Image (spheres, rainbow, N blue to C red):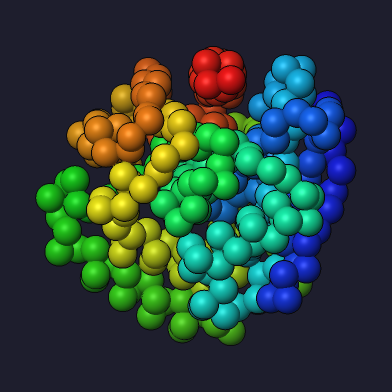
Length: 273
């Protein structure tokens, strides 16, 4: 079992909690970003493996998730706000260049950070992550603004919804797709969930990928129903220093294929030393 230190940073717009395992101050540090409706437990197994390989790790409960702030204000759930949360943690921990690892929605946040300032990163790892609205590569782009507007409207109509306690489950366990989805909806206010999901349908980094100058690894399941092979191939072509690892799997790599994910991450980090 990973021995983690629970910490938080007060951003002035809510406390963001994170869990760290430092093996040495002089070793590289990986910052781990989970997917939508999840929490830091997605990464427990990987954090063990990183520690065994003398690599520090730090896993967030992203804003709106887990122990972190869940204030129901739409502007607090934009990618730019998540980027500032990460910057605040890097500053508090006095970290130099880090390896940023993002899974699914966490990958969108990692991508946003990298196109904004990849000079601050030693490396970037994107797992099961789009770079544009999922509808674009399905040739259904006309649906993107519709979904974005619909989710925003639903979010505002559900602002009244509040639970006394939000569920905090161990994402490292397998609950199946629908089981995990249902449990995930119990982890945060529904308005927050819909605001975050709405961003995905207006996301477009297609003209910014060339700005990512740090070594990058993209991990993709060849049976991923959310991210197409064509989209991944385009990302690999546009990011200057990019490697691709394809797994015989679906979208949920970080939670269901932990050994394969860890092996590919370690191979990549050893190559770029």
